[in-house]
Image 1 (cartoon, rainbow, N blue to C red):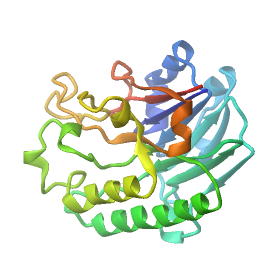
Image 2: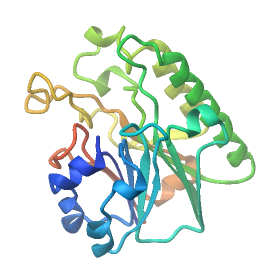
Image 3: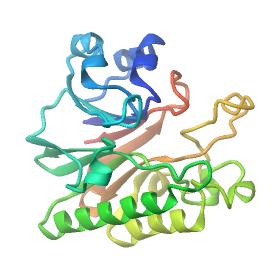
Length: 253
């Protein structure tokens, strides 16, 4: 089973660039999309359906903003949206899919904002999601969280850590929340498999950042421990264009 995550930074623009052609060459069973920036009726699903995908969308109430979508070749037992907290749920940030062996969370974590005005909202989101997941774990559920975390965890995860210490995405309080997830039973599976490898998943559109590989690793798979035995690889597909992020694929036995 392959599960891919990709912040597409506008699904209509990505479709216009034929960015999803990579799925023909590298098909995934489940594709988790973030920042779709569109309502369901605005999305042309013909391409996805021609590839055998069912489509589930969770758009934000605000037009052209946020939102998530999940494409399935393997039908989940159940899907649900959000955490039951309106101030988060109106932004379309979560799709939860129930499979026999795990709960899959497709998540677009909040950005802290240019003037850090949304950092408190972002940290509250991290807190509420962790509490939500801990309840599932207590009930015996295994969990995979994937998506755009909007936080680089360690200095290895971005090109210029010292220059970004006061910028959202690398603030100490943001990074501490990733630590809390790891302290509560989650594993950053890419970093576990590749502890010293430098690879990025996001590059600003400015300053030829992608060409010069001045990036950040902010798109993750966090998994609970029992899933480790099923994992064969995590692949960061830096060659795939069409967004300021690239896809990341988890390969399960």
